[in-house]
Image: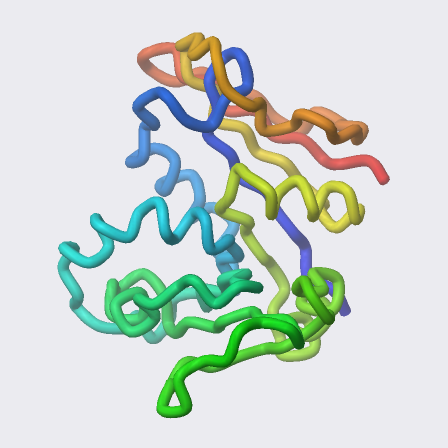
Length: 201
């Protein structure tokens, strides 16, 4: 059974995912509401935070935490052990394709290989479901999120909208079409608005 997939995105008023200060404390506090079994993200998201990750405290894996699964078709992520030790996740899982470049033979990182040139996201979710995952939270605002929407794999969308206009850049939903049914709206201090939707297929 395929798990319930929630896409959580921090955006500006004009739909940008970068170029402004995200209320990270609120973003991740809200994320706990889903009690996800798996946090799904892309290599770009991990690489964008690589410097901060390497200098962060490393208390060790969190036994009751979710699994961190990273789509990394080109094998660009190197900080697997650091990610495992951050204290947010129980373990890490590298999501590769058949044509992903060879990895180090002594790597201890768990792998799931699907697809030929690109990771097969539908197969990934099916496999995660077969392994007991019931909720997957997508923590990505880029290519991965767009691919999941294009494939009709997202069940719920949660936008944390910040009261700022960025202007230039690519909007998180640009080039993608999908229907939304409103579920809940909350306004927080400082004008940050939380919007939750069910995604219509």
